[in-house]
Length: 182
Image 1 (tube, rainbow, N blue to C red):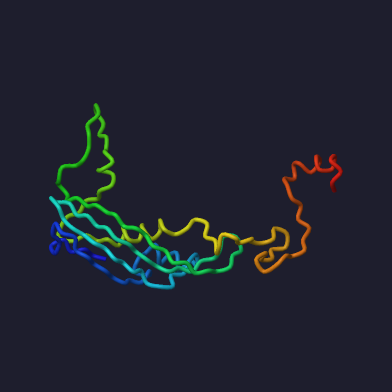
Image 2: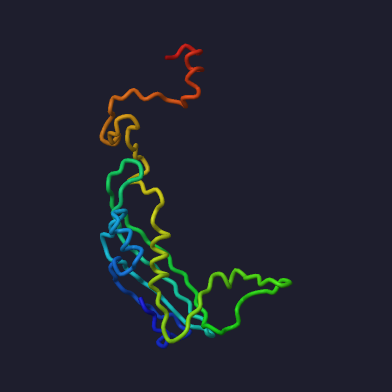
């Protein structure tokens, strides 16, 4: 998504778009590998304004994904919403940094700003990064998911498997025998 800076002012301007995940290289790569399937286009709703050579962009990116559960491996659909809060600074504007002896120490403000030049900003990489950061590391179909049996591999959400699964850590098996257990 390209943001045209020439139409912005110091008042918030709203922009929206609906774009397929395949337009974003990393998201397209995740889908082609089979790690995830984007079941809806990215719904992008942003507000932007300029102020003294700086551009602020805020809003949300929403998408629906289908991915396998990390416990039972069953696919499930989940709606995700990423919050967008970006700040851009025109190249050549005074950087926010402090000199400490011979080294340059970047302030927090300098670390949260990106630079731009020209009349537009390409938000493609920023939007892609926000979606990736919203994807769960260990997706679960629900909080009560029982997962798979570690002996036979049956989905325990569909019922018990009948395997005799020992409880406790194997290192303590001798103590269980001493207590009269099997």
